[in-house]
Image 1: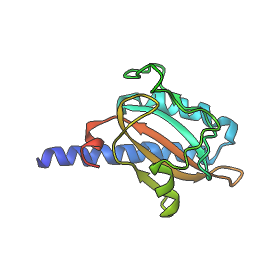
Image 2: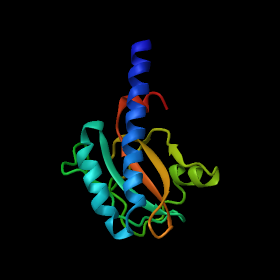
Image 3: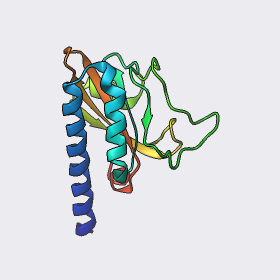
Length: 151
């Protein structure tokens, strides 16, 4: 049991670290670079079971595409499961409104079934400001038992 808890803690610290690195890069970027930076991040970190990433405005409106890794493993196709696109309103999503309403910098959602993939995931959301001092929310969907079982 202790070994599993240590492993879960190590995994969460690793996720926190890699997401913090992405936030650092986004803070130095113009909004036109967001899709490219998220794509690079998702591809470089597929081994962490990161499924996709996207960015919201401070009002909860999606300002980037939903970026998946090159292989969309586990993605269910059909009418129910499809990724949100630019302009989608995510303001009622818990990973958005709890982050904003409680004035947090980072939030990890409870497990839920992703409309983008059809998989059970958690969303890690993090507030940042880019070079124009515009406030955004980075959202990263992760499918991993270590996080899902401990949230």
